[in-house]
Image (tube, rainbow, N blue to C red):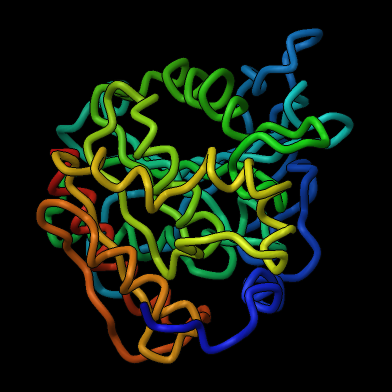
Length: 307
């Protein structure tokens, strides 16, 4: 196996430099897409709020009669992230002839030092989705939710973002009328690991595809991974390398930049995956510019699988 180019502890921190402080309270305006007050949690339930949050529309692609993309945001409290407000965002296409209440949805998992708004404010997913729709892509919604630096699995401190997704946020998306029988999962860096882990566990019945950008994956444990796993036993319980066989029949896409320090580990992971794997290794690093470059083709992949 190729050796990583950087120490593992440094690679755990790769995502942190690309995003400022996380904005967890969704009532605050977004940095680039203004939004007003958003839904709060249902009283006493700890579930994502059911009140109608504010809505903003992505600007139309210049010179093109593009469909509208509505973006809603909110926050909720959850027992799986004690004392921490959990923000969420949802981009929903409004396309003539398509019923929003029966639209498939893809869930994005963010990287370290980030939050649910990174996909929207830094990578501009609204505009990417709109251009995809202009090219007659199958309409689907895109959701994102805060996970902190939990690495999307249960932790010794009581944080359990995996259960938050399965027991609270995904059911919330169903409550918005979205079609969970056509569900996609994607993420980057830490979130790429989380997407591959959750897909491998087979806990989402309607999952049709998984995609990972620059996933932070490793084949073995050492002390440099103590931020991602609580112990060697915790690593073993969430070892995506050991779970690869479970992805045999699931459509999958994995991308990584050729200048990314994670590239050797990603190649090692992909080499042992059964079945066809879309994506590849393109010029770029562990950075926003690279992720923006591959987002259009990643959305096309998800759209084909969710059609």
